[in-house]
Image (cartoon, rainbow, N blue to C red; front, side, top):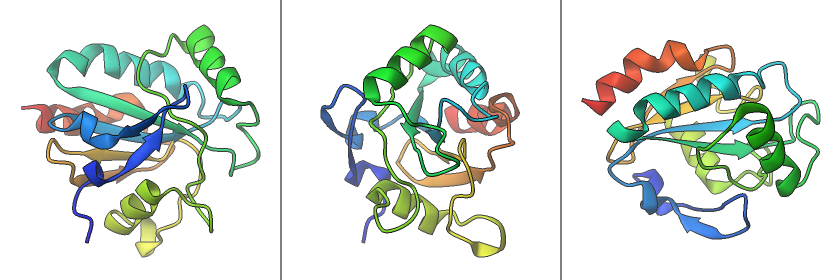
Length: 161
């Protein structure tokens, strides 16, 4: 049975397969993102979090997804350019994935099972759902899309101590 996110691999935005073990001993915030969503301005807050806490061990892993209102229609190059140009994103971006349904990425299957949403539902309801992971790779808390990056600071700081 999978016990930590370090057992998973994902393809980064440049098309290279990475083991998430690369992020061991880091506090992680894993987010499903989209470029044309009402929550897209959260990229700015995520980048601010990253700049503030990266040197203390925070990594933000962003996974573009086109499953909610077709709000991520571009290819990986389009996504990368959009994020860099509009929000100055420097945290790791990954290739487009599915977070629900038959094609769900195994990482998100694991996260949803470990941290179900409201009323025990494992389904991700929209873009910018966030999962906070401790330094051992254990999922700690799930946040709704409306939870701003800034509102996560107390929980992030606690895990960085």
